[in-house]
Length: 478
Picture 1 (cartoon, rainbow, N blue to C red):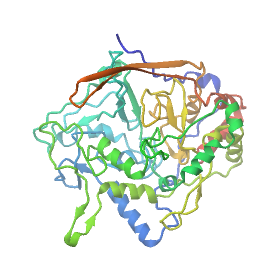
Picture 2 (tube, rainbow, N blue to C red):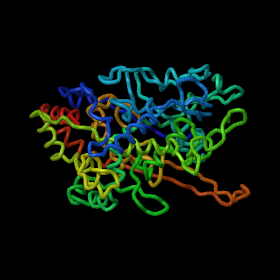
Picture 3 (cartoon, rainbow, N blue to C red):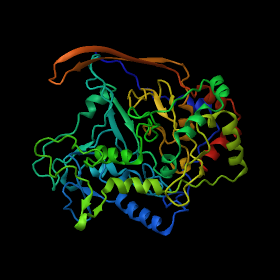
Picture 4 (tube, rainbow, N blue to C red):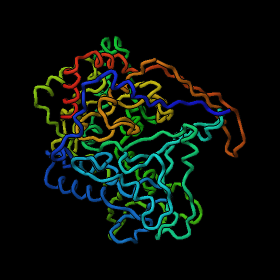
């Protein structure tokens, strides 16, 4: 029997509901982010600049291609550089596109398919004008109700045919089959600006922020919870489902999953089939020099770049934007998109006790069937997502976890699960012992109903035309 799973993408009501409001589009002018945190000392600024250069390096398979100084690409991959995907509006941001006011380039994943002789076909969901994407499969076998869940990233491309990967015959996943069976969930790159402030925010601060305004939240159907580490119980906060604990873990996972580079955080090669492994593992590692000195690997540099990057700078100033900011608070948006949090003591100059403005509580919230992706990460369920930080949203090109829309208005309206519909995922999972003998089977199911943001979205829909426009103008000033 075929698994029944619906990934709703419904914006037809946007025009009927809100005629007259227009997303101003990505803000023009200089990028409001991409530099070092302004309080850093001279040495820390130099360290940031060096780390940014590593973030932008291009990887080949063996490091033998001129102009591509990194190595370890593949066997499967989605990109060949961190900065390739994190590009808008500057290095460290999110997906670029031809219509960007700052970085007007086509989706780099299109040309990447055949770079250096690679024999890949561009999947249907990767287009020149569309967002950079990764693809996760919801179930291992979408045609079977008893199939275990998957949830993992499946690389868009392989190194087969590349001039630096002779002998590798690994082929791409059958994306057409999984798309036809509604078994693919997409993710787009999250911006990395200002993340050192997020990393250095105490768990107690996040917990207190989530607990604040409890009665108001309850009256609007807002709950939320923090994702936590299964090892020590502390708050995890990075990634679309807040599944990663630290920037080092975040960087190490991305290097392994997105570029196929094994490293000291994720040391095992993915898709290590015969004929496709060309380097010792981990491919990225500390280099030990004379006298026992050591130079850190790329992952530490990636984390340092994100940790020392300045947050996006807002431009909120006009009467419309300021009114939109007040309305954003009054209708309840700020109950999840928290405007202000404060860091703890930091080892980096000027980053201690900083009150910053991410517009996020970094907590998980149920978003309903229309946004549910069927993927579980850490403690996050199939319809739960971390509140997306809105700082820098004024210069973003694509919205929601899968990049399904370029319209802020559509993204706002998608927060509402109008029918309060319920969805159930059911799987039979087989547990085995060390010798792969079946021990028992568990019938595991997950049910979720409605979105925690439905009432707030309804408040937005009830505003006047000019008030809705003011909120859109405010958001594009962030």
